[in-house]
Length: 258
Image (cartoon, rainbow, N blue to C red):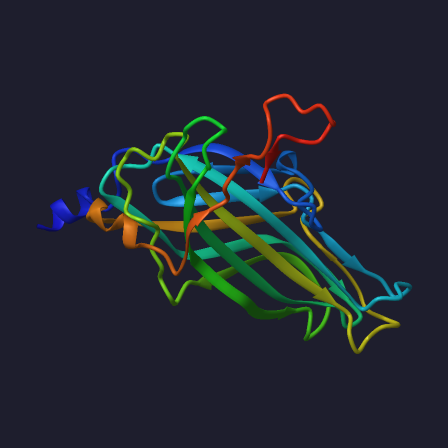
């Protein structure tokens, strides 16, 4: 039984990454500023630009390195679902004069959007959406540099105490009708508060990726029939498109209203 359980701990195939979109946030300016690798047991992000700094001359006391991004996935294994059990941040910080890396945060939200009909544009386009937080850790206090000068590599492990599962996949999600996205938000908070005139700090590796975030992925077998009841948040029959005039508009106004 033990060998059977081990053999079934992960599916034979893993999802395909269909697209990456980075938001305009501090340290994550585009998909080109990051790289990611997905394996059966982990999802790893390397951020090229996720850095922050403070100096005694700065009028502000704090700066956050933030990345907000979305990964679109497809080709899920039939009869499986996944969760993130923890995430590890690794990087480097150089801190002095009271500056410190105060905290980290990690947030992951899975959204499943299903197109109910795909007829011509004359017909309404009706969609259903469901979503759940797979991980939501708003603050992990570390206070690197609080006890004196700090100049070294670090590793911060953030455990997901409230394990939350993705929907159970049917294996048919690799299509136009189903859009599966995982939205991520990463944050590190650097501050010299209380030491405005002396605090000096740099967050991020000077060479290579500034910061790495590595999620541990766990899998579980499940019944795909339960997929339609999944989600902490659900929205039904939204986003309709309806033609409001003739095909050719003589007054220059749009013929389609959203």
